[in-house]
Length: 140
Image (tube, rainbow, N blue to C red; front, side, top):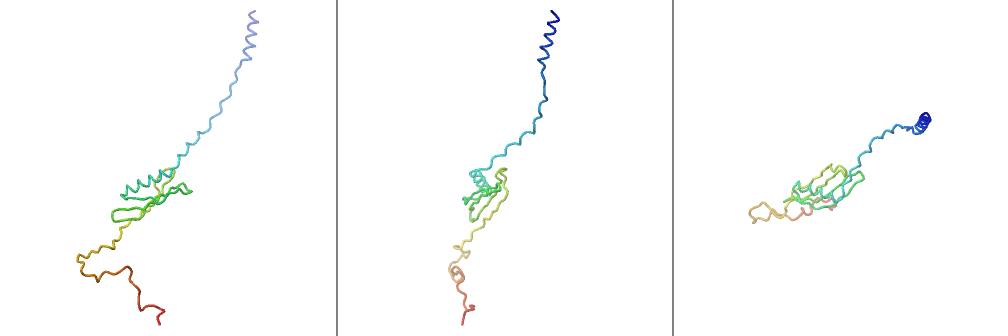
């Protein structure tokens, strides 16, 4: 009986052999997801931050994203006694400031003269220089 039991165990054991396959190697991990692009509001907020850093009072002129993933934000810029524009370019993904075009110049004030005595009005002229006389090529 022992022999029959031994033969039975051998037959059962041969049917239960587990075959293992080598595991496939995992591929490289997927690249990290691309960061999200700056929104319109974020680009404008960053632009106003640059305005404040330059001590300007700014009014938004326009903001748009170009096809090259660049936000262009344009402002009218004002400072005491000066005005002009501030144009900024931001990378939409890295959010880096790429370019600044800052042209804020002092205003000319035509209403005030440095002349302390206002009794001589002969130095004040109207706007422009008037018509030039005697130099026309159409004179007869």
